[in-house]
Amino acid sequence: EVRSGSIVAVDRVDSSLAETSHLLRDVVRELHPEVLARAGLKSAITQLADSVVTRTELAVDLESRTWPDALRTGADHVLYGAAREILANAIKHAHAHNVCIELGTRPELALLRIADDGVGISPESLSRSVENGHIGLASIRAKVIASGGHLDVRANFPGTEVTISIPLRQSAGGAEFAPKFPN
Image 1 (spheres, one colour):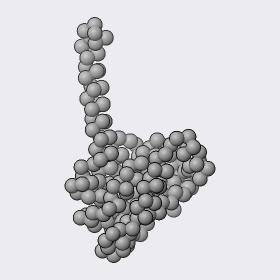
Image 2: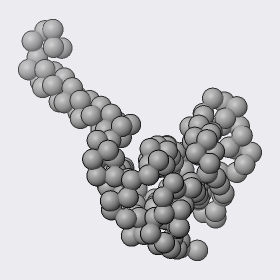
Image 3: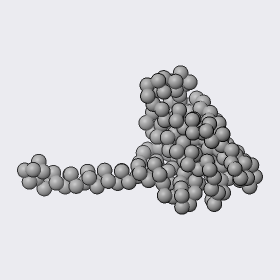
Image 4: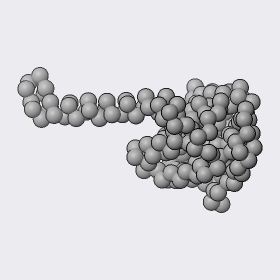
């Protein structure tokens, strides 16, 4: 239609290109967010949560009061990548309506917990997904373990809860991390 000179078709192509460009910028920003380097993990996770709310119908509750605004750790990139992947899984597979994200510290420990109210995932389903080439969560687990940390995935009823803990090289100020997920 564009080749035949249709102005309506040109407008549709222009609109599609603008939307594609916007989505590509969002993806690049999520893969390597400038805010992570500039403002830290707490701001980057906040921006990620805001992006999920804007792009999807998920309601996201973020609790990060125990993560100091200025805290920078060696675990930041691992935790951010994990949050991005876990949220992507909740969007693609969980059929969830709500997601709770908790980012916090205990003395010398970084904690990230993400829970959704979706369909949940059994250990068997998790193993099958890896066998079928879906390596996102397996890749996160490998990075967490390489950081000296621990990753736990468990089915809730409803939903899935992923908890990651990674030792910090510095004390996080002794703040306590108290989960606040609904039962």
